[in-house]
Amino acid sequence: MSGSKPEPRGWRDLPLSALPYKLSLEYKTGDWRALRPVIDQSKCVKCLMCWLFCPEMAILWDGKQVSVNLDYCKGCGICAHECPVKAIKMIPEPTE
Image 1 (cartoon, rainbow, N blue to C red):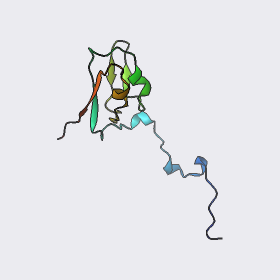
Image 2 (cartoon, helix red, strand yellow):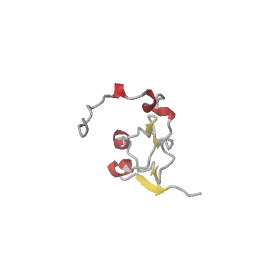
Image 3 (cartoon, rainbow, N blue to C red):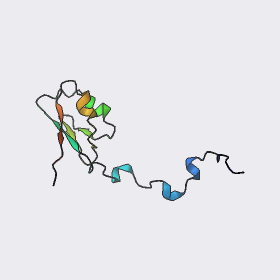
């Protein structure tokens, strides 16, 4: 019967090629970023709000210092927005 909607399909019905088979850590997603976060370590109070709000888990904490893994940072700026002491600034990526 034309015009009827097909039944919803679950993820198990998708062909294997539609699903990623590698860990997300193998896909470096930060290469299309337009802005990059720069942390002023002298202002950083190490509250880790940036780490908490980063949707890409690109904020790193080694127990002493906060840093950014630019391989995965997409430059969304949430870290800079959430930083209570404004220790993070977003700067344009250098162009070639």
